[in-house]
Length: 495
Image (cartoon, rainbow, N blue to C red; front, side, top):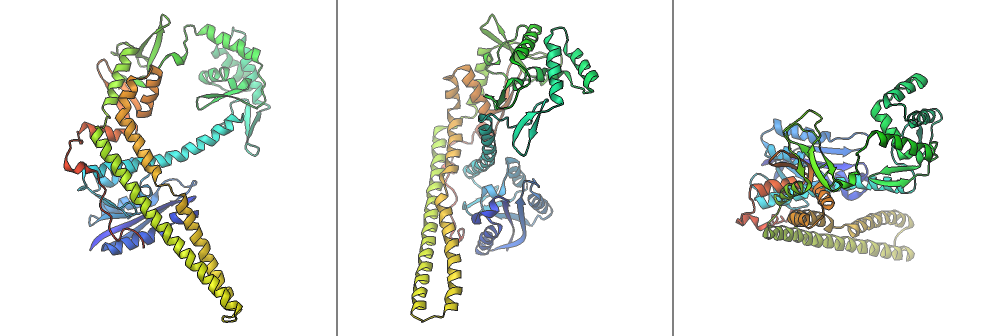
């Protein structure tokens, strides 16, 4: 009998939803183990909370596999219960662990077809996207707060955060320091080093030069702030006048001639120098020609200057490397759609089963009530059974509502959009203007190094995985590119 371990995970928020509970997961996995003749050696359970991040049980399971060569099977409900990131997937892959995803009817092992592994990689990416979506919801709330005029972050020097009221107010002592910084620098006779010395002498506060510059250019002090790249009008009280702020900006511009707007430079922040890992910066010549060069923070290097047109062409070639052949894309998307249809059928059957159970419970309640009125059953018996039936009715109703709110197409859409973007990335790139090209690159790339000849991209997930498979030419038209999921086993679903 093969040895296997069970792994279940839930967050503190998900514990309130019955479909995600640890007992429900363990019940499903144990039924699967019995049906498939597995001997369960251990159970590993993670309950994540905001106060205690990390997955202790997952690490214990990895340690167990390393110490127990005879156990190489893990049973888990589905992909997003097992993985939080691609690194976890690689860890189990390196240990040669066979993964049974019970609700997804898949078995992932070293012997799985490349197409099955690829679809599994997409599921891992979708699970990762779900985690990212939670972060997006937090950012959305902060953006709404910004739109209402309240800065959603930590207040700058001179202000304080009122946690109880969730507002920002003027700090009575520190606001005087900021006021003095502006007044000193607005004279035009005090360099930042002298302002720094004066503040330390007058207030006993040491402020570095870089932070002084940040203070002097921060529009928060005149009622406006920037959040997530957008400018908002704040509702907080100000203590720096517009006239004083503009005087300071005039002094700053006078000391830094030749500045140009960052909006003129399309590929700013996309490139680093392959020779010394410095940032690749750019400069505007004759008001219309943009040249890119190494910033030279570590001294002179061998990177030549490039025209923006040259940079655009080099970066465009990077997107060719993540292209998926049309026939492969069609098969993978077709397989994902087939998975969705199967899932929809299972959801519909489960809904019908619960509705039938609900009808039976209500029928028993109605019949028992009639028997009580006719004196066939005593009041005490009716009260006890009625309470049981009502509890069962409520539980079934919760399950029906959960099924109605389930959207099996959400994962399909995410995966399909990723694949279609990879397939069309280069075409989209060559038909866009430089600024739009840069935005597309930032969607696909984490970073890109450049030397005098080549570029060296670092792709975001899951485009890195698509790039590796394209590089190995795993789209060769072999039989295993049928991309069909494993046939579901009769025992894989609960009754």
